[in-house]
Image (tube, rainbow, N blue to C red):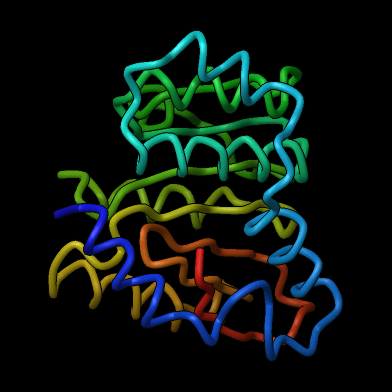
Length: 195
């Protein structure tokens, strides 16, 4: 049933494949060479062998986070995820980054993180406080990934609020997750991508 649903989602977004219609060269490059890169990266096979139990959706998101971490090379990676697989993929994507969990993020007293990668989920019980913390500390070179943006009506409403926030720049809607850039020098745009 899940594979049928994912095929239906892919079919509904067929016109959004591989950056079609994106005019900005940097946004197009991000979609083409990070979000929808199909080349098997150097660590994919090793990570798959280490974690064979991971379901297809989690692995798809893990590979995306690997590519984003590899692209961004952040100083800090914050994740509110519970699957251990995410840590392995994120560490392989950027082994110099400090990876911290939800509890550390809540107690952090940092005012500003210039280059950070933040992964949060709309379905987190403390989503509102996590979102406020992330938006408060994220620098213009930071990226935030929001999971489960289409989980229910409340999740969709929260995603719309995030896109409308004046502290948010370019956003990418991948259905399974949303990607948020904080660079306000770029023209504010929201893209729907077939991922």
